[in-house]
Image 1 (tube, rainbow, N blue to C red):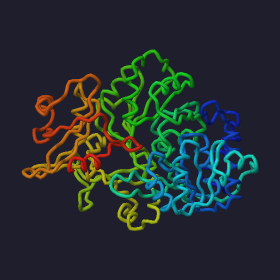
Image 2: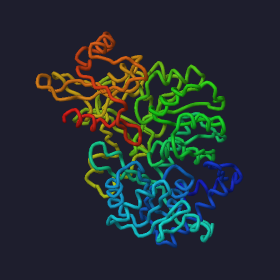
Image 3: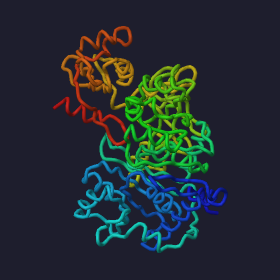
Image 4: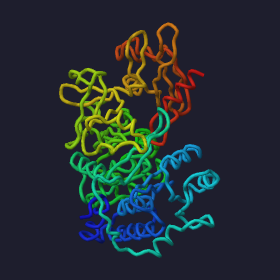
Length: 507
């Protein structure tokens, strides 16, 4: 029996063949059309020499071709590797070398990077171009589909087979290829539809980049699992996003906090008809309570999720009913995922105490590509060691305190940046803030606030922050140093690059 995510499309194309599966720009594809295109690409890739277990790398903006590529690889047992198009040429080359891919799919927007890539020594020997202006030696994506059959490839695929490899952000060193199996993606979808109020008539908007697990699997793959509709956009623009929500009658969407903040700052926000939206989900970083309140006050329930590339991604979800009452929490794990919090000796800590978060379930990564030692370090007895410091309250709500590496030790006291950031986000002049530790001869480390101000705001001093924080956090947690910047540096997933801020501070 053929299992895996490719079987979703087979069944949906039979059950509701004319229902819209994907919308991208002016193109609409039914589930029957989507499945036929996936089959044509899968059979075309076979003719181009792709075998089961091979990696097929992709440098693509959000598009129907990106999803077709992933599902086509899945149907023939290959592994799709979506690469962050915002990376430098050296970083892209590293991933291509590390994944040992021979086949590469790219689009017109990423062509300048690919032109540089051709000059590097890699194993790539088949380039597939999405668009109308390929390099002379490349294959045209649509030509491959036109010249291939649409019959099912007929491969025996198991749920334990790897179908997707996503490279981690690399904020602590070289990125690692997290291998995700068909089962990982399917169980994540089951977790999502059990915990979120999704329906088969759902219409989601995916504008978060799908080279990131949030863009790919918070809504996109779960909604394809249940036969709903996915609208794709290849670039986030706050006003254009609101227009698309109105035009396509979007019912739910996932964005990272920086995107949600940008939406709230569109001057004529209330002029858009968002009555179709039933709920929103945020993830990738803590979302300021002001953003949550903004949407809840407009009658749009707001959920906050926490996840990782290695967990496909759902670890926990804070429901809309508790998003204000339990602000700062990331909620509770879904039905098929388990968590525990341990001390350095792997003993579970009491309620309310901080320790490392461990996650277990059928959504946990198979491991890291070509890194058996890293895999052994990260997965023990089925538990994935996240590297996140967390605690649970007496009601079972989970709180991510910080990354272990981001914790500040000042004068012997442990300080968790997220706690301070949540307080400072309530300051009326602060748009964005990141807390880091900087070397201090007396205290070991001092607390530094890197701040981006709202437009036309007055400058902020250390004294201003101390007055604002009085009574909200302990004095030893208050920032002793301030730096005002125009924007905080972020990676493509929306996470602040605190390593870069620390390096700048030291230099």
